[in-house]
Length: 183
Image 1 (cartoon, rainbow, N blue to C red):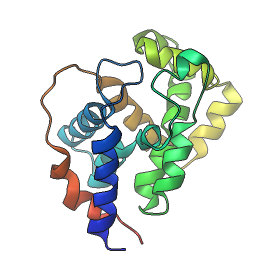
Image 2: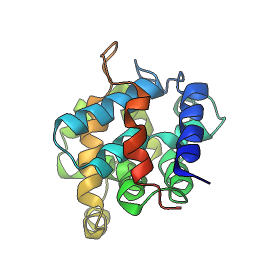
Image 3: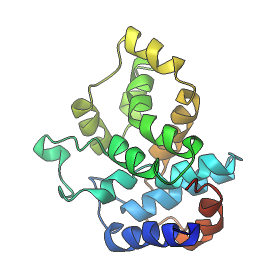
Image 4: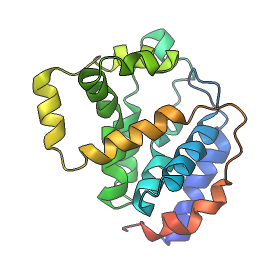
């Protein structure tokens, strides 16, 4: 399948399900666009901007509803999304996605006040995701070659929850995403 067709399918899923909210004041599409925009403004390489754009793609893949954390369910969206996207994109895009929840857990261990800055929904999901890492888990996490990128993705993720913030349109990222298709 051509890269343009693959991106068409990804964009179609954002159009069909990007209106969903997961306890935040922004939709999944708004969140994705804000995250990518913040990474781009910070001068991140294009593969990191792509990871930021797609980091919550796993939420679009499941049909468990928008309030799953309130029901005590962790859909493991990071694994769901990364596993799906790994069939399409290079690891520099998919591995920070896979690790962005672990990065939240790591930051809660490394900087205990970090938890206080998380949104209420993110605090709630953290409890389902295992809470702050232990020292052993943190050491293991930091050995992963993508851990640093995942921590930065997490920072952009945390910031990307601004209601009514103007962002570039999804189509703005088409050419960039097509460049990282590995199939």
